[in-house]
Image (cartoon, rainbow, N blue to C red; front, side):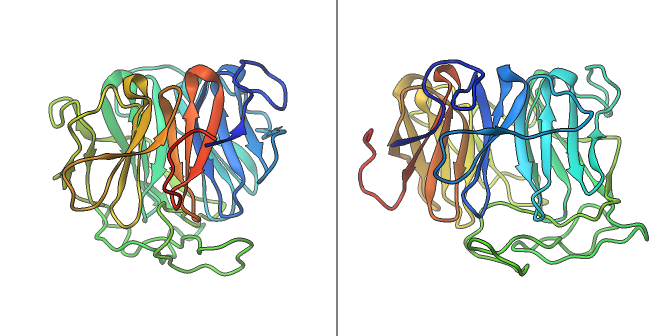
Length: 312
């Protein structure tokens, strides 16, 4: 693999990281890293080892763990140390969910939030670690006229009666100026208006009473898992599902590898050798896989088009 961020030693310079967690790679191959212990989000332009800190205006981050972008390049961040979710837009950063300032287990609170993802309707999903649950915050409005304008890569029926069609998502390829669906894009990049708001009360989709300890995969808007990933794993920290149904699971804690569970298979194969557990996994539009190695303060990548899974 190749190192794309961090030197392997903890630090707070432009070339170092300190306990990196979640990662996101945009269509121009810019890498965003939740640099948790440095209380910042670092952006590494494609091919650059010097990162720049993403400014968050009047918002002060505390141990950010999750980061994702929308189709316009605005960031949404899990601000774990402040128990909240913040998002950016044309008017800067604001808190958009769990904004009480305190941790808890009510529907308006989080406790140890970690990662964030969108569905094709712009709803937000948060892994709420210390509450042992997955919380869903519905997109309530996406415009000043309280309507949602939409198209996407995915199909499905919304659980929210105010949403009838999915949201616009990004196209495949770099420097794209149009918006359409793409079979190659493995993540949703909704298009939000400057007035988008989400429900203040989260809905618990899954908790310890509905799932076990293995990774599970669900289709959008379903509560019945289509896959249970088990066998040969040891304390997986992250996973990534591509649009064709392949599942990549961290297996680095003990077994020093990332495993691929191809669609319609019942066993995983090693596709990447790592030196530590991956606290974030990502597959970009060119089929490169990225691993955020929390304990060694580094993000590494390799091409999944190569037969080699060895270190470079």
